[in-house]
Length: 233
Image (cartoon, rainbow, N blue to C red; front, side, top):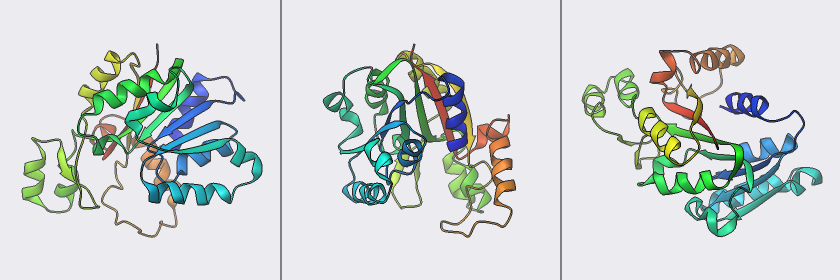
């Protein structure tokens, strides 16, 4: 996904431009720190206090120049208007968040308002059109059968959450003024790998296969996750 995001950034903004990035639901700050290291000015917004503490600990171990380029705010992603002015960012990330939001449209509209004209909105969501794949490949036939007609599922943390369909999000992005520009699949072949599993010796080949599948039909359409990139008009 990081490679996909970098491809969109390079294709949209002048080389060397220091971008204003907002990472909503940044978790422990993996993507935020990566972009700060690349020279961008990054703001991370996260409401989970444990994640905020982990992100601050990671940031504290970075060189001073990187620490100065990143700030962390504890807060809800649905309250971006409380913290920032409209049009304040060139790039807004919202990765792995929508599955926990029962009504995502207001959140998405708020994110779009944060974008400057021509700004990039990057979403990572669970693919509602492929929910039967994981239980099916695991031999859970009743679970696979039930997954065809729903966008609800139980994740690996044991939480009941929701997925999004590409068609629906395409319509939503158009309606909030950040129409879909590009989309990719993420975890086409590796979704059934056990959490914490050791990386294979040929991990670069694995990444090459996933990257190719993530941009190739019909494979990307059955990926566990979808990476959607909208552009503010």
